Length: 519
Image 1 (tube, rainbow, N blue to C red):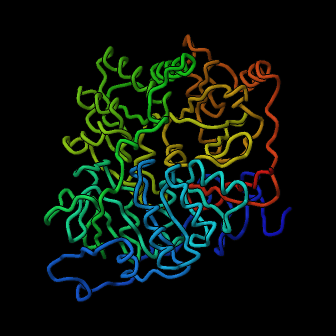
Image 2 (cartoon, rainbow, N blue to C red):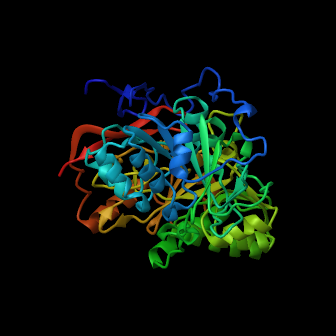
Image 3 (cartoon, rainbow, N blue to C red):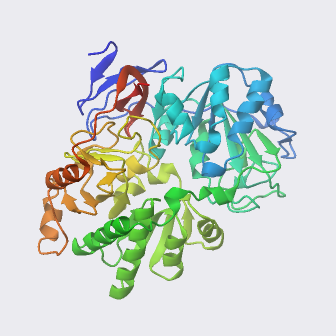
């Protein structure tokens, strides 16, 4: 066993210390109970802020200086603009001009547009990143180039980490499509409207200092205020905070693949045949193309049967918006806006409700919305024969994706992973996932183009679909068939001993370690 590593309840070796903080190994689902009280920033006083409420300053650099930026601080940001964010890079460019070093970046997620942060990692302005890394930054981390450990958390886990004091934020930077000089802001108004700002809620509430950056200043009050100005220290007006058209990505476009359309159809039929599709039910579909296609198939079944959902959990897309506008659901409870139809709907329709990781996903609260959802449809990069799933690394071990709300959704009443049986002739069904992101006891159904595999633990689901014309098959049987097509199981990734990142579970414990790729 490696020095400083212990085996957790999932049988994975994990470190006992992460970036200088004591770490707790995963103790099983529901095995860890938090202690203590919530964190809080220092008490502020109105004496230090303008009596007229005008907190506007000239630029981001001035705001960072006013907030006391210095070496070793933690700067947070959010990803509501996804690959269209224009603020995070500007923040670290300004930090470089100020001359600070060893900052920790704590984003709710990073995207390929944030590749310039690599220059700041190389120069020492940024020490390490604790947040989901999609694309270039994840690849950089995979090759062991980052000085600290990457820490991957779910959306709810990120809120929990801030709330519990695990990650104290020194300066939070919130990119807001509309704001008033006092700092009230929202994401539904202005030329860069992106939807909601829920991922920045914890940052605004718990950070020592908060900067709002906007390209659309309105007279007080900016309503609805998704972030309250009472939390805000400075407001900066820039030319443009983001490109809202880029919140749409390849993962938010409906699939055209015949195989994936078949998977989507199987998922909808399973929801119907298992008795989940009934008046007043609820569901959540991820942003992947297969999940979006599932929503369309399900919509037609609902119309045929005269069924109405009580609520749909978003990520909202135009497909969910159409269901709301056609009266097929009472509410969309939105956690992230995935296209411009979702932005419009949230702005105009009071039944399209802005939520946050606190209400939706936070495990250290008095309940959350995720467990109330009847069925959730998600994707995965790998699944093993014990129904364990991976969403952050590929079969070659490279860290290229974030967790998002994926882990949090596993607490729904029926969790369905809709995945192709292989990608690029590499089987997706394996003996043991490269990286454990979701324990198999929480994954209920695996659906590929080759059939429907139900977790043996879910005897109720097996009984419910008895007699269905769906191709119900053991997962081992599907795996063997796929390996025959692909010429055998995938080669194990070539990994070094060095741990470059860890995966947190929703309760803040460490579920798995990610090792450096060789070469």
